[in-house]
Length: 494
Ligand code: GLN
Image (cartoon, rainbow, N blue to C red; front, side, top):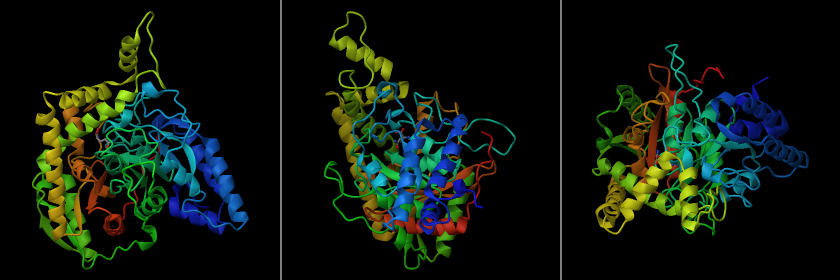
């Protein structure tokens, strides 16, 4: 008998539909894996009953001969940035500890409507700010991967969607939601040997997702295969009148239109992404990717994205600026933490609540954001960064005149030991150097596992597409997946 927890989204859905096993059996198997993996700290809360209830409904619907949803019988993990009705939602921050939403986010509701169930709320970097999961108030997630040198160093699962990536790699769930503001789906996917796609800005509704930087935030799926990502993205995407930046476009049938034959397609290789400080093995994996896409029939062309080197500094102005504005709402008045020292007035309460409730990285971003938006510095920083953002978008517009999809590394290095970069924010921010340009331009981008490095740790390749061309990204991702033949899984130590 196959181990149910080794199955992905499609295999579970189709197995439930054919009666090979029941959705309840699947939910029970994943609930058991989740319960046995507390050492990974991937979940902030677990919701085994939610998963079981959805599974029962999927089994009953099948028995009654009702049409099955895209995710029927598939239990998933939910990043704890999505508001879930009646289930604590914290953004991994003390300031929201105990907050139980009275509403469901649009994306999570769509997933439940498609027949999925929830195994629990996944840990993340606090307010999705970070690249290693170490900014979580609830303690960092530990990657299920270990180096093959016999050392036991605990490694970063990536961030901010590190609970999602660790849980999927460790077979605690077949798929999970992620969000990506500057790389938070792609970088953790690369670090843990799984796939993840950030769609075009506006594809997935932001309604009910705790806001970090609203002009960049996008939800997307994380799973172990390109096809599973395509299925789940179809369930998550769609116009939502409750999000003013939601795309009013039909959701394409990405999963059934997958096609890894790239004949007639051009793949762009951006010259400026050959950066100092990038690991040799990452550069080698990039060359493999080029060869694989050629093998799939694509023509490979060199392209130039001349403003790439300004993307990271621009991102670390725009994102904190928006965060400082979005996070002004946490004031101890309406919900979440309230710290009211004896005899304190309103201002003291705001200050005490925010001082106690936000972690150091969140405070750093609020301070930077407030500074770059202040009257004397607005033009020098914020306006300048927005101009750079336009130039970056134009770079991509010009590049997509010459190619259909862009291939690049996802990250400059493989996963690193927890603690290594925690005291050096700049070193941490450099993780995002290859992922933020697509975020600033609002483009769909995906990470696909492409192999292991000499230490036995996963590496990922990134595919960036033109706006609305998730299909092109998924197709090129599939071509890589088929040739990389990545089947490695972490050895269980937890
Ligand atoms: N690591 C980046 C940051 O810290 C990206 C985070 C994200 O995409 N949510 O801002």
